[in-house]
Image (cartoon, rainbow over all chains, first blue to last red; front, side):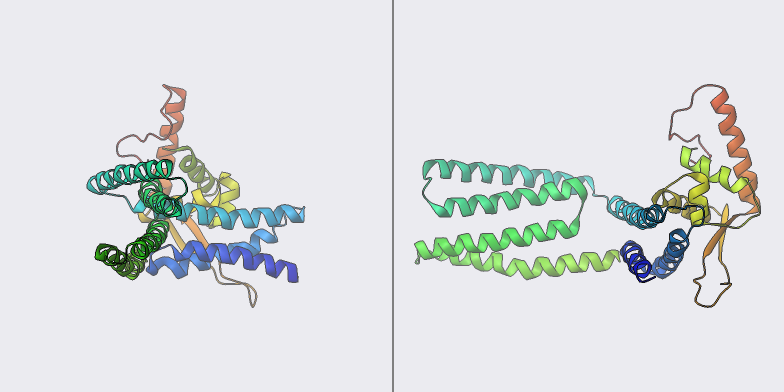
Length: 193
Length: 104
């Protein structure tokens, strides 16, 4: 009985996650509907083999989550202008990575160049993630990570050339962008909910 | 009309007035939940299917939602299945391609 309750909780967690991705007005009803089917599947008298009932119940919950997640992504269609902008950004980021690799080849012993390459790769990852799946959350995480790495690169530059004020300004600008992007990401998710 | 829709309508028409739960329809139509529920939602929006909550028989039992074809739904489902059947006997239809004005 206890194991059954635990399994039901797993199923409820999955359908709960699925319902959270739905519009607010239908969320509770869908959750009630899907969660009510779980114990029925788990006690289906037509399936004799217990583990098969468990697999079916978890499969039901997981497939519901998969379908909702897929719809969630397809709903967020990008405009043509946004796609063009992301492609341009990807090309520019790839040029930056190319430049970083060139710098590493020129000065393989310089650790700052590797840090710059890491930053460049994160900048490349953002448009790729957005073009591949429109995943706003993943995209925001990549951008925030990229920004933090950019802050580190600029601070390193500042330490090497303390009188160059451009490094401080660039680090401050990137640091300011981190909370701004985080808030923008939260706002986007709240609007979708 | 797509294959999954055809199977759902066939499952409903096996007993058109019987209320059907999501899991029952899954088994009858041999469809995963992720395919079935979006289809049911679409049929409900088109007013071909109506849904309602059952009253639990025992204390602590969760009420389940059941679906039923509406009068219009029964008529449309029979028509669409007949069309699909005549199409399959004639020229092969492109899978997933809906005729204009059909359920899709």
